[in-house]
Length: 201
Image (cartoon, rainbow, N blue to C red; front, side):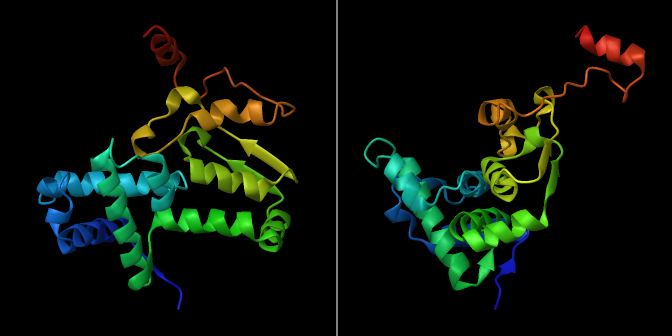
């Protein structure tokens, strides 16, 4: 059966359940924080940001030396337990959905080509709010075929705390220098007086 997709609330509860199920004495650098809701949220965010950057626990373990960053190493261990619990319960979260989609398209050429042919014209609005996994998904769906339009404003990025990567917008011309760049300088959304006042701030 296909895994059941968790809501963010259900994911938070699962993270809390994983933390409550482990022996905190085996986590000497983070165990004292387990009872705090703030720690659960921190671990929740750590897992989500890792998934959005396409990083599995083993990737992080290679990047984070245990002897120099023991707290992060223990967070990685909890991330690993969380993924095991998802698999055991036949569940998937939104971060995992993005991760698995990117993995499928990067490894299965036939599937990738089928979707590239299906979506010959792609428009991504608010591109400055996309994360790395979403960027990779767009790149693979486009694949140099058809047309791609990215719409964004690097001055309007407000979701950095959620993993949005404004650098994706700024790197577009580096990755595809032959693409046309259209700058919209006229403000049609606000009254001219408001637009002028905002420019003076």
